Length: 169
Image 1 (cartoon, rainbow, N blue to C red):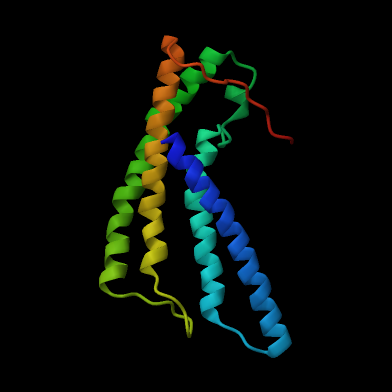
Image 2 (image 1 turned 90 degrees about the horizontal axis):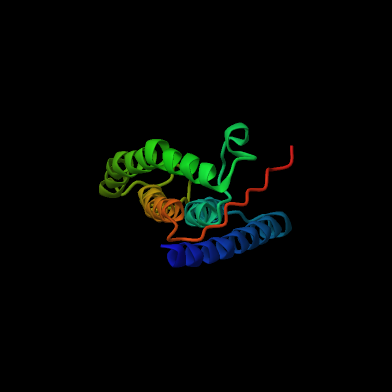
């Protein structure tokens, strides 16, 4: 899963570049030639969604996700691993699995209805909605990998970097 998350992270990086390029070209064309397109504006939104949902598993893999510093910061490596393990099992995995399951009907209904944007010239909506269960599914898989890493670290079979750099406040 780490390998997949790395590849998805690279795709997410490219989506940022594409979104910025589309944004710049769209603004240039709109102001220079008075031509605009809702499809291009929505394409930026879709690319941003890809960036978020494909980049999130890599952030988790890199241990750059959000956590509560008061509890986590300054603890030993084993304590950090136990805190992570508890958080992954009790909070993270149930939420990710629930998001996958709850969003499937949302995507299915959009697909069956061939839902389009309300904006003139807008895009189909189901492809971007499909990113919700896909993204949370990927986060679930990376969560399983992270749980395995923590268990491996706690049993001495996996060497994990437990260094945590507290964010600037």
